[in-house]
Image (tube, rainbow, N blue to C red; front, side):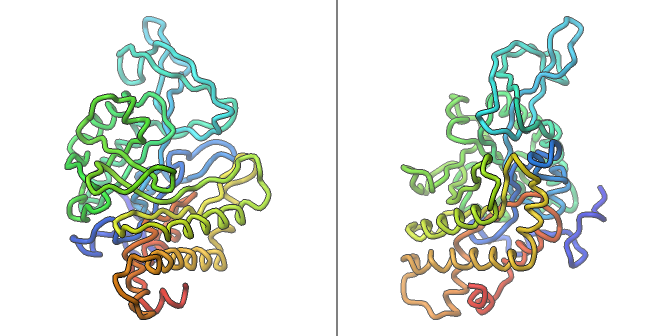
Length: 367
């Protein structure tokens, strides 16, 4: 497996295990990708240029994936349509769902699916391909001590997705269960964590070992629970896909409000999520994203990241008044832990990786 094009700015692949094997997920900061499987489509749809393996090598550890069934132009020997589970990016308003009996690509199995027909947006990478690449990364020499998290949301055909995760990931699938927020890097090493939305878990009906849940605590009615089986995070991305003007300002304003809201949380085990993205359907996401990652806006991202942690500590997490330096050190423990990206690359991931290494004084300076 070559890594020449996926090395950090210091010449080595970006890794996290050296932060300390006993570090919990809620105590580190990692890069995540929004619409991780959308490497194709028009300028207003495509969100990534690297596939899942390449993103992992670049330093991504958390992947936002949406899966739907696309019927191909092929048929099997019996003349039955062949379908494939693929990533997709489209607004709900332009998706039509149809129930069909088809054959899944790569097998002769006839199954019932919910086919998604897109009047806009695009399909992306195949689910099987993404799972194979995730498995290959954690089974590689480079990724043996690392971990990947696959968050499945806004999907259809949940049972088929679960079946694919179990069969393709095999021993790479994280099956220990429990609260992922407090899992250590040693616990997660060499594993792929699969997370389903509440809707997905409900559609499965029965628990499947290795299929955990995720819960967004910024949604009304959701509260942190120590015994939750999966990931509990606070954060939300997205701006109106049909309002292309001022997307950068829209997102910064939304993230700032979410950071302010996070101050009301009282549990340091919550994983925070910050979206540094400007996705929309009516103009080039990549060009807009480039502006999000110029020097002035990277400084804004760091300031927002630091301010969120500062507000969280000042909101009552700290057991006693903190000095400025102590507060800076405390910031690293809490919010946010995952920074979501469009068009992930080594430089962006290194910027996020470096947040783990900031001293207390540096955090005060950027806050």
